[in-house]
Amino acid sequence: YSPLSNRIITYREPGAEADFFQMATVIHEATHQVAYNTGLHSRTADTPLWVSEGLAKMFEARGVHSSYRYNGLEERINRTQLEYLQSLMASNQLRGKLVELVQEDSLFDSNPQLAYALAWGLTFYLCETHSSDYSRYMNHIRNLPPFQAYTAAKRLGDFQHVVCRDLNDLELRMVRYLSGF
Image (cartoon, rainbow, N blue to C red; front, side, top):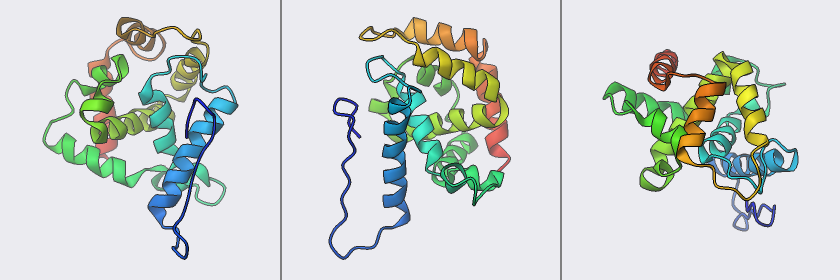
């Protein structure tokens, strides 16, 4: 998906069968497009990557994109992202990463696998356990001014104001929740 052109380009090798990962990629990219086209995010605002990527990763799970058919909690889990996060949780490698993710996008450059997994984990946790806070935050994000930088201090302050003041406590609660699967 390109936010500049608002188009998705997909392809499949002739004769190749679509597999789960190819379909998940199409769903992921389509989620970006739908989020922008419906006004959930603005293509002209500096939307934090964790917000757009976390939502797209969440929709990869069949219980999210096909909830009428797969309606259990287990089917709303993105297993690939959860298993990666659980391996990091077991070795205590997540501590402090949530603040970094919320505050700036640099984790997507330095450790993309962690950034995508943590974006999914935070999005999933908030949607499942704090949906009204998540909804208020998404409303805030959709109203960011166009063509203006969203500074690290402002990003952190907005998240703390709308969702949770204590991100270390939020991280602990999220880790406890995700450890239960």
